[in-house]
Length: 287
Image (tube, rainbow, N blue to C red; front, side, top):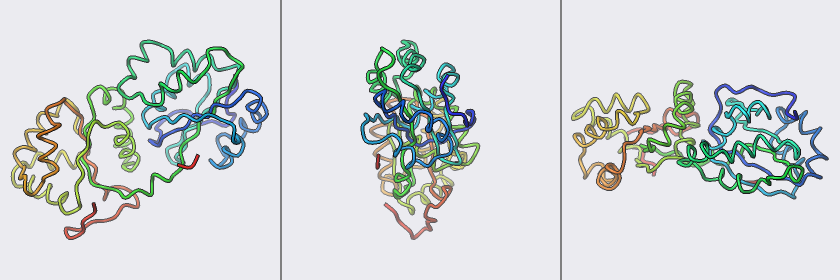
């Protein structure tokens, strides 16, 4: 079995996206020994330098690589390297060792189960050859450019089928207090979202405290499961003033009845490095 010699077994992992680099077997075999030694310790730039410029890249969303990496066959065969603190998501599969990965991707029961979150996984499934020995694959986390985006207060609605797949990862991030990674994961896979300026977000809490105090407790709890969706929806409708919360009003009229969602309440003040708004403050990949 070819795998990184220095690997970190799966525990809690980060929510960033991951890129799969498909490399011709000749190039893969040239860099394999060095990559095996450095996969867990090299910088992203160093790994990209080893990969070179002749590759086909497929992007996996935050939840996609999580469900793939945590499949027993994939974990045992390739020993993915994952670290939440280092924002790392890496794995390598040699040309003659692709079978466990290919077979996992072509399992019909997984294909159907993963359908609610599938984006890049479908491209990866059809991009990997059924015959071994033709290409190798290197999985590498995305750059940190996404962290420079302006954070926004939001309520994100996650479809129940998506939540069924990603719920364990979401709860780990909530328990760990890694709210920036939680927002990234939810944004990749939510059905819809309501954005709030800072003054309207603070106003949401004040209006809820006066008319539906249970909604404040939901906001402070970060997450509502699909089982509690009806209660959250009823509380939103009780506190709503369409003139004060036009975005919430539009979402309730257009999206709210389309399903029973998990709701993630994103307060950017919880996120490291985020702006600290007051009532008067309003806010609206390399290789």
